[in-house]
Length: 418
Image (cartoon, rainbow, N blue to C red):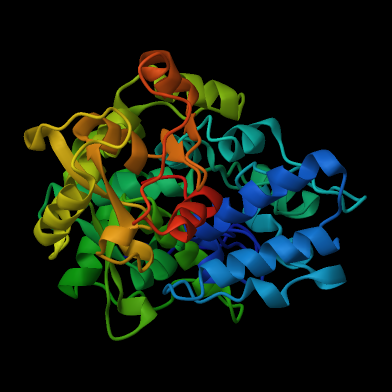
């Protein structure tokens, strides 16, 4: 265990945590953008098209229009043509194993894992859990050969998302289950270059919070203009997929990322599972052998249904308009719920045009992306949902006239569930 007066040293001059590219765009980490772009790549990949193609540009313009009324704040419409989104920011998808690295032809090419995510065979909760389990530094998908070599020569290898959750869980046991961006860049990253143990991270964070240490003389591992923002992407990923909640501060450095106590048991189980290095498919098999993602989905869905201020009135109006589950025709109000089509999080409105009645279990499938409904009423089930519900759910339904089909199209094109 390290002493209080210990001062870490960089293992090499430019040691830092890289998320993706040197010019980060925070909105790209939002699932609607990250996975929305992936869905569109998947649509065009069989055509042999390039990222610079007119067709891909049109898809980005459509996605940009779809997120214009949300808080995401990224303009994809301007990132087309030869200097397109993937040329400049493709590392966001490569870093997570979704598209092939170094595709010199410029053709749209997903990995097998990326195709399974894009085809909704892997749920959003599963994708997030796999990423926590497998994202490793150094990451040859986004870091050069020489840089990776420096990491390996120093005997350095770590799973940053898993490490952050381990630290937060330990701090939570002490009633301080949060981390700030400042603590990440000034304490955690420098210590990670010295092969610190979990208790060392905890000690130095608590000493810093108590004012017992000043960090004078500690190395700066975020010397580049964007390095702090890039490091913060790790927190943003955990926030976007429900593992932590962000409490704004006076600045980005002062933001608090609090462990989501609702998912505490599942997070502990996830970080207890040994990291999977063989393949992303193997990681999926391991995740599916547990109840982790099922519980994450169930708890997040339950919370989302009770946390909206207008939910009771929304349910009343939707059930009045529908009268029955639009898929199973069940009419018992005790087991009927009102489902938002365009999610409230993305500026979906609390109106009858943006909702329909679903039986409780069907609503859970819908909210978690295991059941999708197109604007024409076609029903698509994930592989897991098809095993249990394939014979019970019709392949197509009639969409009520009061529903705005644009909301169905928005969800079909952009959303993969909680």
